[in-house]
Length: 84
Image (cartoon, rainbow, N blue to C red; front, top):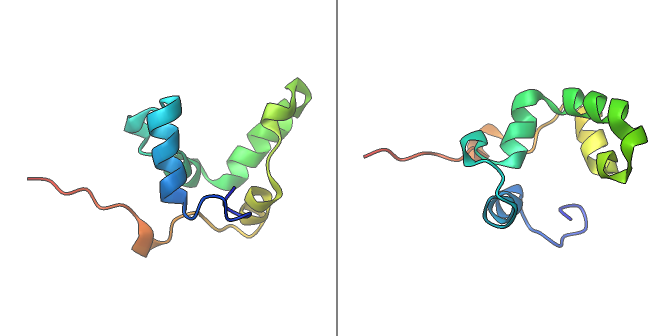
């Protein structure tokens, strides 16, 4: 969806997943979680599970990011938590 321009930013996908699917907020967001566990690790895990069905298929864009060892968030894009 990001690659096709349907959703503009990883942050907007994260909000949709938290509010619609109930992704656990203590993990912050799905893209941050993927960056935390490293995309290469995620791809390796899903490759072991691909025989269980299409849900474990990894999109090419994510595979490319893993191969190039990049992440979804740059340091400048990291969400900032404001504490009072």
